[in-house]
Image (cartoon, rainbow over all chains, first blue to last red; front, side):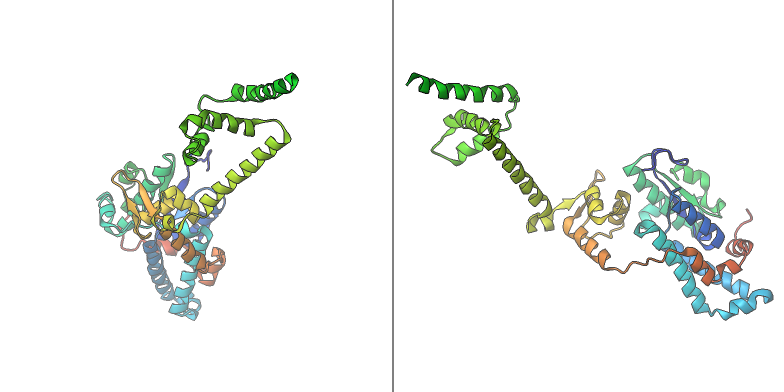
Length: 165
Length: 187
């Protein structure tokens, strides 16, 4: 139990990591480094992993179109690139352990609790944070759940903070 | 004859005095005495005070025999408790409902994680009461532990090497931002 934590004194600190933060490699490295030094516990969901893979494919396609980098990117076939992205996700999971995944966020009853201001495509991320927050405070009211994203506007931070995230 | 008859009485008093002085208001041996007289019909309930006194005398003496008796009794009680904890009956295995905390201890996970598994119907037979109390059958928890122990765990946690092999560092952070926010509103 972290007692003198800068983000959540007396409780544990969790953060749901959006796909865009997992995908950006340098940012993701930093986020997992911060976990390993004990700042917080990262969480995400299988749906966020799927988004990571979809966006990785878009990134590789986009980069392959650029003449300056096309040679290097084209050496990796699409499938091997995908496989390596899957491997990157596997290392994230292994670093955090079995508890890395939030579940139960796709339940329609829980999705209803997501503020309407949240973008339709990001409802699953917001719902994962709400589910995690509700369950964590049952054990310790001082636990804090944050949501880390590059897409703050679509995740309605004011409305989400009213729900404790 | 006189000295002989007096001496046992004195001994009895000497044994009784310390025991009555330390006896708590609720006598823990009373339940044992009651159990004995009810199991042995020839003693009868009227004999309970004598049985109780005898138990105190046997267990509270300061001689070697009394000390050895206490030690053996303590060990016996510990053994019974351990057996009941570690070897629950087959019947209780199947029907026993565990709290989230008990299940979390057996599964080696945190309470919120187990609560999440129950809420998302990932533990068979688990239920949530109207008051929000979660319960999960012991058999389900044991099956889950067995299943997860059998799974081969990925131990490679080197996320930097994985990114490097995927060619992720060849792409600038700017490009990632541009591609992943393409089509979104300006922010």
